Image (cartoon, rainbow, N blue to C red):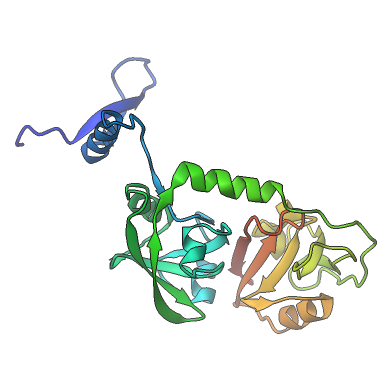
Length: 263
């Protein structure tokens, strides 16, 4: 109404190949920030990062099991990166940034990416149900991502050996085995051998992770088949179930959380 620019058109979705359809625009605040960076002495757009990764679109069962309504669970932290230096850990749940609530991963990225490298933010997070705060110095996203990718590429692979201790699919529909000898140092859990088609595990997506490792059931760390049997055996119809899964070839590359409610 005031004749002010609020966005700049970037794309259009159209079935006629013309100017009829749904238009998309970049917010004017973003355009101003990008423009000012491009005409600055550096002539480069720099985005902020704190050196973490997270899983978008978490199942609602995860929020219930981990005790939060909104926020972002950290599933990977780059060694030596801003979040790690500030004391944040994998599994921490970021709920605020500078006092503003973080709704989801998109919200977190939108807030952090516009911060200048070298500036600081106050991050409120939950750890084991307790709220805490950390002051994090923002890093240059390009440099942070490059460092994290390089670290992933240096991870070793364990020696293959015949595992043992099978568990029948039973309640969840998963057959698991103990980790083989020579598995990556520090890795714990049980190996996913097979997933029964149409089972609960299949429905929540475990079938896409055969050969991966389940490291926790409902926040309980799993170290062997016996522990897995114990945790699964205690589940009942109507219970929320959350499995934490990692790639054994890249155990430090972050975990995947799959969850649902047992029928």
